[in-house]
Length: 504
Image (cartoon, rainbow, N blue to C red; front, side, top):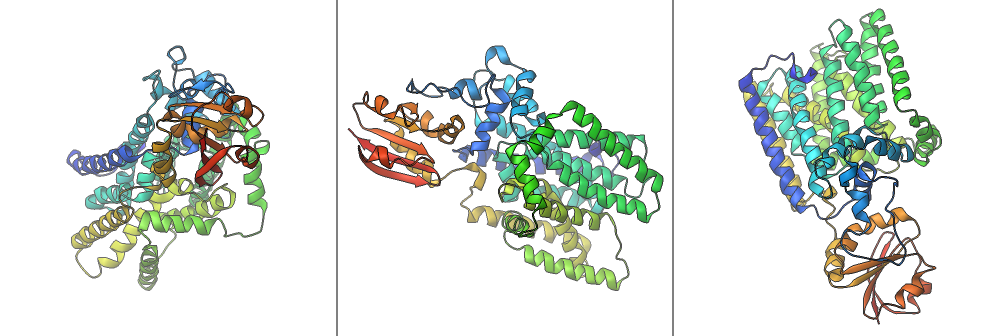
């Protein structure tokens, strides 16, 4: 593998990386034990990877369920369906995401048939984390030429809220981040080196694998490759630039042959249409990037990003004064991160931390480079590096502590804290319109005494058979016409979800 080669690091230096991996693993396991709820997309994650014949749970209206109920066949790999990649491929063709992550996640779940656990998703993220740490260590050493920072940068990055969020969020963003780091390392290694066949093969493979992981990988790849192309033009390496363009085109052709459903997702799917509409709109150009920048400020820098920016300006002025400023790899890397945040801010359906998780490593790495560039003019290089690691780690611990050692994507919420004890010994009636909506209530239903799922038309016939108090739940449905006929007390309301206690 590319990120295991090339840098002047010895076996003993791997001890520092191993320590960073162990520390981040411990943080992740600690936060994983505190993960109670699930984002609806995490539920989709299990279903799309493991269900056969349906991209939503198969529900029988009016049937009384207990425990996993209809979610069992949806979330779990059944004994006769292990390593069934045809089903995964078909599910993703109907969904809005490419299939590679889901195939790999299905592989992991296939080793544990007929079971469901949050730890399958977290374990997948931890596997990616190991390689993320190694790749980032190599990249950090290449850029800083410091074995201390080769250990320090991965440790700093791995203890940020943004990264720990990614570790407990059961989606494809850890895989996305890993491939982004490998592509970055590839470009960095060949920034001033003649391109060879190995480079073109790796570039093609990463474009294909990355875009099979998430369509936003195209944004990241386009940005960093575009700035690399500028470097090739500056150096008059026109033949290499031509081969890079040919490689990208060939990668696209191969990708489309493998996954032609991208056309349907982009031009017929609701997410693709939404992204294209947002991209071509000239309204509120920075309206998306600003919220994402605020997230990065909070989850990467504990709201001290302005300090890094000021130090960056100082660092830039010093370099200009020393006449050492140039369009180097660091500058290209920073511009590619800014480009990614701007474009994704334009096209993303939500302004969520998930969409900037893949570029967090860039900002931490360059933040460390900036701090070192300023501090080493005041103290010795070793003291500067020690101070940087101590300050950044202190900042991360402060940020985590300020959140009572919870992270947003553990989905612990007031809603669950209120509802789960209430449903423990009660029957639940869930009123829904679309099958996918029931995913929002998985944990609540699983913890109930028993539950029934109905539409508005069948509600009356179902509750006629319930002789004891029950809990009524709904998603984005006005229940006034139903609740006015019953003796109800609203327990909780959260967004589109409503909970009532019904007395019989």
